[in-house]
Amino acid sequence: MSGHGRTVDSRQSGGLRWFFGVVARRQTYYNLAYLLLAFPLGLTYFVFLVTGFSLALALTVILIGIPIVVLVLSVTTHLAAVERTLADSLLDVDVPAAEPEETDGIVDWLKTMLLDIGTWKGLVYLFSKFVTGLVSFIVSVVFGAVVFAFVSAPFHYRDPTTGVHLSGTSSLGIDYQHDVWNVGIEVPLQLSGELISTYADTLVGALAFSVIGLLLAVVLLHVLNGIAWLYGKYTELLLRDTRAHSPN
Image (cartoon, rainbow, N blue to C red):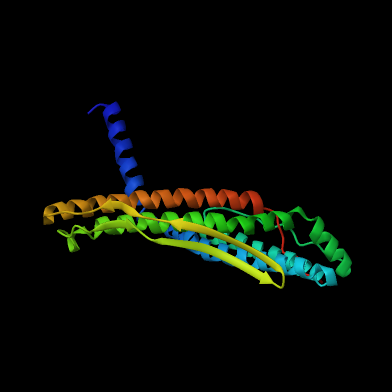
């Protein structure tokens, strides 16, 4: 065999190892854990921020709202620090924190926190976590259901209803009310029809579906790794050199 032929074979073999090796890589499952945590964390942050700022707005007329805003911003810097640590631990990124800054009294601490751009970058990041978490949740659940339907085909073949179906109407809503104030968001979801069918009238056909499902599972892991990589870069961009603020 010529040297060129060996090089081509080596590249093909390396490509196959890279493609199927995603199943055995530890980082794949760190990424998956991060993505599965993203939606519940993002929803928690969103509820906290919307509730906190809405309550502050409602109570501004009696001056209680201002301390609430300060409290929310201070907690936000700590939550951003948690996100920075989470990304460092689970994603293949390095998000260094800024050196803590000494402050002289509550007024100096407040000025430092409000003038620190990291405070506001952290706020943007926590709000956006709801959207990025929702995206990873939808991709994981929808494509995970497709993979499961294919892989489990041998257990329910000859059933014409097998597959992934979307039906019904639901909504994702968050609402905060206080006296005459009402802040809410609701996203209606209308889903109907058959997403994909895995009907097979023979065991051989069902096994073929199962093999396709295993290949789709590998592709899905690569897709999720790609999403986790994007989230890691986004976290680096917004949370690099930020700090948690606590009054001394």
